[in-house]
Length: 288
View 1 (cartoon, helix red, strand yellow):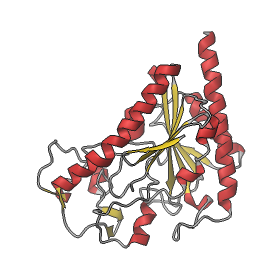
View 2 (cartoon, helix red, strand yellow; view 1 turned 90 degrees about the vertical axis):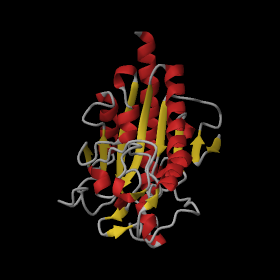
View 3 (cartoon, helix red, strand yellow; view 1 turned 30 degrees about the vertical axis):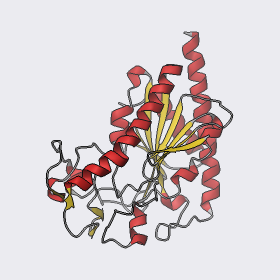
View 4 (cartoon, rainbow, N blue to C red; view 1 turned 180 degrees about the vertical axis):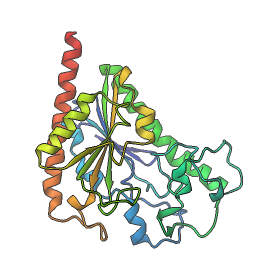
């Protein structure tokens, strides 16, 4: 069953099977609002998307999981940032809340991005405060509302929930620009604070079993979506999964290459193992 609420695609198992497993893809949206005007050429702008990630995880509902996907692009507003992580220098006017910019905003990678990547700005001036407030109300708050609704509903029904925040990463450089990225996947749990260790271990061992190189929390630990929703002490286990784009697509043209089919099959097996793991954990909890 699929439905769209406020530019968020929600998919559940069509035959009604439900497990306390949620996958979300916050950065794969490609529906650009008509009022989103930038100076960056559109083909380059699209390189800011986590292209095809929602397709890699499309079978999640077939295994009883819930899948959320943002339809709007991350370059418009990034739901994996705190709502106040905004560079004041980008805003023309006053927003109805205090701003707490992090170094990400200083680099142009905050809630409202000003840079596609270093040296490639999105705008030729400041953004009206009213336009930024509108993006928060139209896209950011609804996405988080759907996340909270799904996670709260699953936790209330089953007593626990396992959440995978799905992303892709460029192959060329680490975020700090120091070295080429030498791994295929990065699993983040904010240094062990957002998930039980067994969930991280299951995902890492499954991916390594396919022959992939896997890192934990290096260089990606997880950002707002893990910090806000991961709470293992209360049965809420959230991890971030970054996939190296070179495994499945041409990073310039965004076209899939021959590796896509293989990777999609591996992701499908990973989803099945996560679903099995959640089912087993529920049985264990019931037996305690």
